[in-house]
Length: 299
Image (cartoon, rainbow, N blue to C red; front, side, top):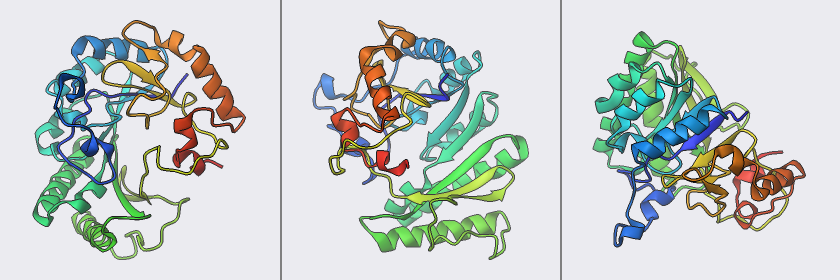
């Protein structure tokens, strides 16, 4: 049994972050390159298969899921299943979709990528952060069972390190002011510790710090390493291709397609079995895995 299945309901986004390949994808110059929204028939097929193999779903690999025109409807469809949603969002639409989220019993957790605001103009960044903090306050009152992570990055290489540091300091100050934290309760973001990433703010609201994220393909070649792909999760791209990892946004390790195969058949395919055997033996057998820095995080 997997923990999670990533269902990419769209690969489009309203931001253009330097760390994300979404903004670097080819624009809609031809039908083959046009950004896509998963249709309802495929989405329902994904959920039907996910029910048999997992407990939780995400609505992204690439893309901002709340931009899907059927997002609220998809929430309602999800509620007819036992699956729970862990939503990762940039939070720019939270003022519009927030009440729908709070009213959905399927929602288990919301992760806000507030580190993305460090690359925006100050006025826009502050507005988005305020909308997110307003949602957090409503959630603490209406949904105390809901887990919320405010994600920031405070380690690694940044295009503008000073600007990112200023943004992190501003975010910490706003969180402290909004939730009445004294100086001792606020995390020390100048000293990153990989073993202590989450800091409780209030209830089930957390501030989550981490190092800057790198997508696969830019790391040094190595066939030694391991991964939790196929053990804890798999991904389904917006066109139905099933990938072993939530980082394979291009489908370079497509193991099959949910449109014409069951997830069980795909997970028992020779490619899936070979990849999983490799991870168990600390062998990275696919070229994408061999250039993935994330594999190096696991001891």
